[in-house]
Structure formats: structure tokens, C-alpha cells
Image 1 (cartoon, rainbow, N blue to C red):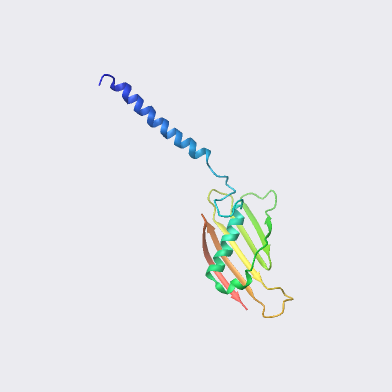
Image 2 (cartoon, rainbow, N blue to C red):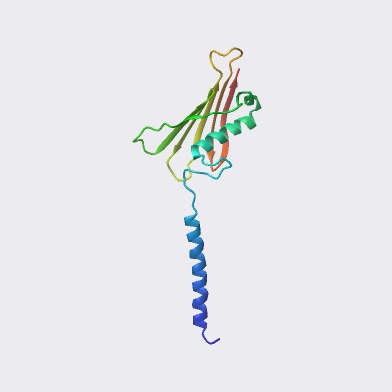
Length: 149
């Protein structure tokens, strides 16, 4: 070996260049914080939280399936302007009400409350569903569930 220092320099520059290239790629392919990778494109995180919570209820409480024919959600952000530190979203569809609250921090835990009642003027037995849980990193955890008829 005639130039061991030159060979060491070339090896170090190659490693540094590779690491720098990987870091650049990771930084420049970061997804927007208001979007999640989902099978349904363009859902905001609160919409994904809502859909995941309702899907969890349907899968784990089969008696609710009769009230979940289809959803046409309305609603969205209800946090008062100027309120710092937290966000609140509310969605409604055919007797279902979903409320999502969370602190504005990195990787928040989303508190979710889902409430369903049959219409007061409906003929038949009235039903009421109350569900509470959390959503974190795509996972739903149930805290409480009440089904009344």
C-alpha cells in the first residue's frame, strides 16, 4: 500500500456520503403531519381516528352493526380560535356522534367518544350506544362501552 491515508480518506468520504444521502432521502420524503397512510386517500388524522373507532365498535360489538348501514359524515374542527394546546373535532351521521380531543404535541393520544341514539320519533325500541376509548399510532383501545335498549 503506497497511500494508506488516501485510501482511508476515500472510505470515510464514501461512508459519509452514503449516510448523508440516506438522511436527505428520509427528511425529504416525510409525509405531511395531517395525513396518514391509509387505504382511503386524503383522510385527515381526525377522520382516520373517527373511522377506526367506528370500525372497532362494529367489529367488537356486533349488536351495533344494525345501526351502521352507511355513513355520510358531517362536521369537523370545533376548537375555538385562540385556544392553544388542544384540538377538538366533532362528526355526525345518522344518529352517530363522534367527538375527538387531543393535545397539540408530537404523537398525541386521541381521546374518542362515540354516541349513538335512535331518533326520538322512531317507531320501535329505542337504542343508545356510548363508547369511549383512545387512538394512538393507529391502534384503538376501548375504555368503556354501554349498550342500552
